[in-house]
Image 1 (cartoon, rainbow, N blue to C red):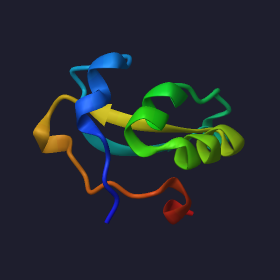
Image 2 (tube, one colour):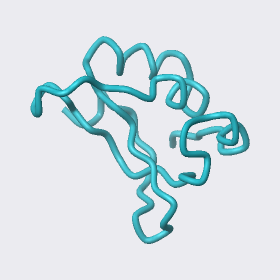
Image 3 (cartoon, rainbow, N blue to C red):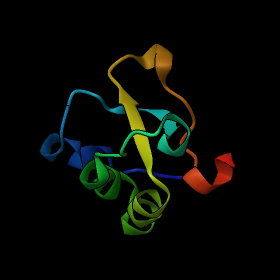
Image 4 (cartoon, rainbow, N blue to C red):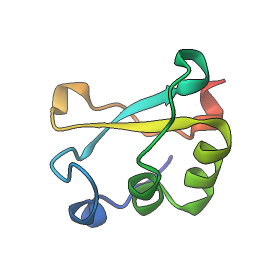
Amino acid sequence: MVRYRQHTIKDSDEPWKIYFKGWNNHVLDKKTARNFDKTEKLLGKRVADYCKEHNISSMWSDKTSEKKKVTYPWQNK
């Protein structure tokens, strides 16, 4: 089980979005990943570094209906 640090979210972009929604692999859409600071604060440096290296963004929501079980980005290959 992956745990994240929800209490530190107030210091991040979009602090109202507290529910993990999934991963966005930007290799597919040719965009640039962002929000690495939020990813690191909530999921740790190892996860943020992996996201930077592989152009992946974590996605967060303010709706409980969109909440998903937190996974690691390398589990979604």
